[in-house]
Length: 381
Image (tube, one colour):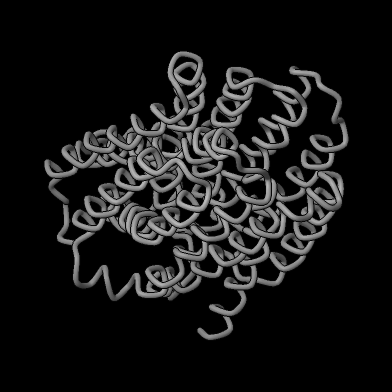
């Protein structure tokens, strides 16, 4: 078991390092090329479409062909190619960046969520999910911090090559790790995906997490614009992502302990309330250092939301549809929400000040909190 923990911890650490620098600096990169908030919103929404459709397909194919590992490696290769194209073709051309950046960030979302699902489905690793996932947050934190300085001193092209090297390392490491444990005695058809939606509690969970992730996705778009608005730069954005990713570690390490003492439902309600508080606090304190400090509240929101989602969705999903159940839920919660969030942020940003937009996203979290109170789990968690 120790070998499994070390292997998958190493994989997620390097994967999140490779992906974190691209994801956190995507908006600054598009801004540097001259795209306005509405154009960036469309590009970010396209990546969400890619992620949503891709997660549907990936989850189904993993269950149908009884493997996560092979699809993870294939998508990693494709992602590496898109990263190269996105940051090499750096003249301002909306259609080019709409397609290439959209696919790049979309694939990052698919691969990262597929990796988390892989960890859950490896024999004996689920109870250690928080510990393994914490290494992902640490990798994301480091790359977020480093990427800002790489861009300032070396440029976006240099950052691209660092990410490509790390992605190649992820592909190589994946070959030596064991695949997910799948039930070889059953086969699934596309029609079985729709059985998930006969469970009203599953649908409610998808809705609640989708609403929460509309706000969470605004962190990449609106809060980035907000930092620039109050006088920050790329290094400040990198530092913010570093601080908030690092803050996730303690609670992720204690995830099993917390889950055993709080229900998944209570974890979601608490995490959502703190997420709303973070955005409201950003608006109340319009100062770069204050925003960076307040980003530490991520440590009390994201781990609770993430772990509760994995736990509650797992318990609402048939065993032979575990990959599908997880990825379909993620497709909506992080995919559909990511389509809506940049568009909402883009249009609101054209009407209201960015400070009001950030405040509005924070207050919006009241809705998923209220809805979560009506959730009745199929099994006690």
